[in-house]
Length: 374
Ligand SMILES: *Cc1c(COP(=O)(O)O)cnc(C)c1O
Image 1 (cartoon, rainbow, N blue to C red):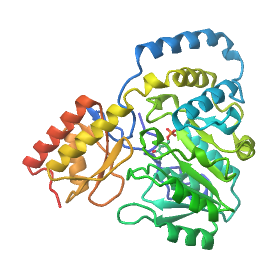
Image 2: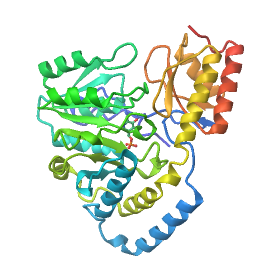
Image 3: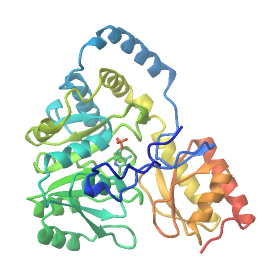
């Protein structure tokens, strides 16, 4: 079968000019033993949760002739409840809004606040979809380079925000692909000057982080949208559920642009059951953090460099040729991610068992000089 992502668009079609040189985004899909390239939780759903889901789903199937609850009332209640439990805040369902993955949330925000000529700004390297979605929606995307340790130069950021006046500012914390966080006091400094911008604080990896959630600041700033997802720590990537937390009058902007009935009945049901069982579904989060620390220690002993991370992945280097290392790992049935950072590859923490496999296969490749370090 032909893959839609690898076919060129028929040049006779009047494709939007801004899409002329665009390539379809997506991590390479390969059939390997160690899937360490998309930052998923490596553990499958527990039997008990699956049973609950089947019961709730089956009692809803007869009503599939009806559109879903457009306002996601019960789901937003469960989301608010969950966020309050894990971030120690007291938001209500009016401050939450869900969509098919946080990517759809990001897209809704971009659509809602766009005008021709608008700029979006990000601190790179960061999550590549921020730029892709911004440009797809017609924004000019400004890339502010991070410091050499991948932190953000706050004073410079404040200057650039004042001079460029971007409509949208993206901040990812913990940052993907570098793993480091922005403190809430630095975010506060940015929000203080960014009065005319919408600030998207992307907390896709919030559950792994030691830093408190920016949800704390939504009462203070109407232009802050905290975005989160059930795709990572929640072990729920297949269901496609992400959400935004902001003031109700800010979320109202997303109500203007969401597609009618965008979140299916089954998605809402499955997400509600998952949220009620969040402790079970996230029972391995601490294990993943411990495994990350174990891997980083072992890999450092092998002479590799791994960067400090508050997420379920880390940057690993420093390789003479990250391309050769990527290929050697694929041959060893390991898929990691080339995120375009010289000398480094991004590695997702796999299951506990697989961390040992990863370390030992890497050691073999080093011994055989199939992996060469700088
Ligand atoms: C994975 C990821 C997302 C998107 O996840 P969804 O599956 O669309 O919810 C958003 N932001 C960052 C930084 C991510 O790494």
